[in-house]
Image (cartoon, rainbow, N blue to C red; front, top):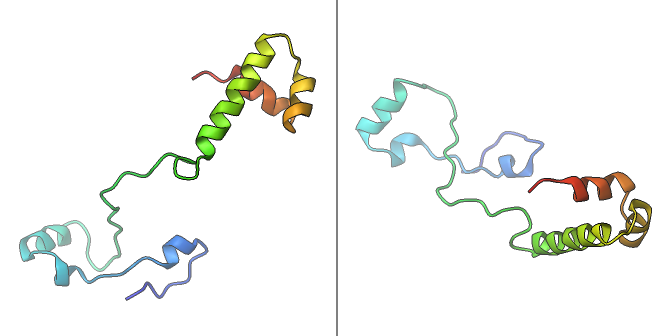
Length: 101
């Protein structure tokens, strides 16, 4: 059954609710009841989340762009030129250049 509660976050609204007594062994259920009773708990998936932009390719694109900005700056380009070329704010250019990795 899907969670009937209204959430602002769409992911939370689509959480699947399963009764613990239907899937957990009795000894594990009793152990959990020592810590929490009658409340909803979230058990995260075992798989690791991918880094932002890894699937779409955006991470690679922005890493490459940021490296180009750093190289151009070290070759004498100023903040204003880089901001104009890459359509970014001067403060964003500064953050890219001075970011420690």
